Length: 557
Ligand SMILES: Cc1cc2nc3c(=O)[nH]c(=O)nc-3n(C[C@H](O)[C@H](O)[C@H](O)COP(=O)(O)OP(=O)(O)OC[C@H]3O[C@@H](n4cnc5c(N)ncnc54)[C@H](O)[C@@H]3O)c2cc1C
Ligand code: SF4
Image (cartoon, rainbow, N blue to C red; front, side):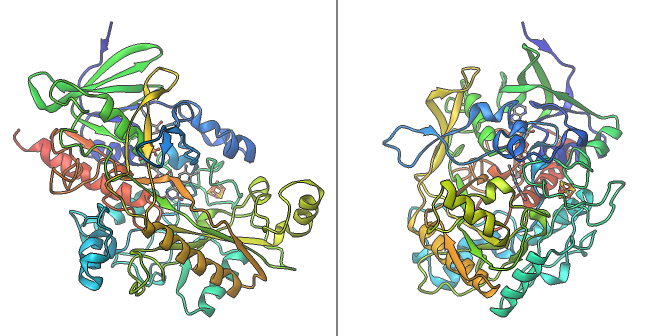
């Protein structure tokens, strides 16, 4: 038997980076919100400096996402197998931001109108015919006030004037940048020697005490682990406590949503969700349902919620749920700096030196054979087990020669990575795997993804820039993995926003075209991937969607 909860104004499914923004904005406006979160609550005293537990066993993914790793295939005519892309999403109040190193970039103004900008500068013909690249239904200026609100609500450290290609800002960052390490300085100087414009990564980490939380200790266990002193602006210690303090947010942990329910009288509205808590099925109802469970699960829950009027999945009569899926492609390069103890195991990713000269359309693409680009980042926080794989091809990958090389050189290896803005294509998408299921017998998400020539050329181009950069910083030997590397944690599309219901699942504010009281948040709503980390943009979009929700709730139905 299904137990019914008392109705609320808004039911939020998944209380991570973006769901928390909705909870914060909606409760501040006086709405009653129920947040259903599959994972538990975690606290700072549970966080430890443990590379195996955090990065390899990924204990924070165990409640749910470790059991439902998507399957992957490169072509539609072959079977899919468990994805080898690391996803490592966290299931807990606060979501995956609990163990992110909080690089908090805005997108470039160009990213919001890349299709028309490319066509104007280089001609429509340079866009691959099978790419589904589109302009966003909003501009940077529309999102800027929301970027600003998120930066101050979670606390971002950075240097406003140092970002030469960034769009205009309402005001500076709430905190000065994080401390610079020797590696940060070395790569900064290397980039300047090449005529580039490096700057410190903006990060949602406290460079000084902020909003009652302590400053960062630069412990070196930021990516893949939660913060032991609450210096990270993850929503479990920022947005969620403020929402709970209103008395209007109820957080139900261990609540796994299995289905979104359509109003039997109106196929263009949902009534709430079904979920499982302590083995019992329950039903939660609200005037609006917000889906914020990360890209893979957003698409999966919509497809699992098929019904009479939505036979291909909820809000999917136009076949747009799962379409336009695209991950970042991330080439990386390592270099040996003989005689220098770089000690990259110290500090945090959030301290990276970043270069945007090869991002977006900040350089001339004429004759290059690809469009877009990506940020180059030289980061700290390469822990010992991860560092043991950063050996040049001339060194064996095992045995005494490998150990001897590491003992002599590991502290002198530096590396840098790029986030290439890949394109979405008609043949790449997410859907339900017809055979693979999770431990509950529920179909897993199947990824069909084949990078195009655009991605191979763009990745090779950025790899060359990374090589130049490390050499300019003093590396004597530089090596790279020439395989194309996919970032399974930076994944976009599947429920993209747009004005045209034939080419997008959601309207310009993030509400389903076919179901007016269903909002979707997160990277799945992005129209294109951009060349920066996604979360600040996803949170700014979530803030904008939440304000629009308030307007719609106040308007007559
Ligand atoms: C190791 C790592 C490093 C990263 N570094 C950065 C970075 O530096 N900068 C950056 O911008 N991004 C980074 N990211 C990406 C970032 O974490 C995500 O972009 C962001 O957390 C996505 O927000 P979200 O709200 O969509 O999902 P999440 O924050 O993952 O929240 C989703 C929540 O939904 C819950 N949930 C899932 N399914 C259900 C269900 N069926 N029922 C109920 N609840 C459910 C989950 O348990 C989770 O708590 C990183 C990610 C990882 C894994
Ligand atoms: S590096 Fe700083 S913010 Fe990150 S976990 Fe350590 S103390 Fe916390």
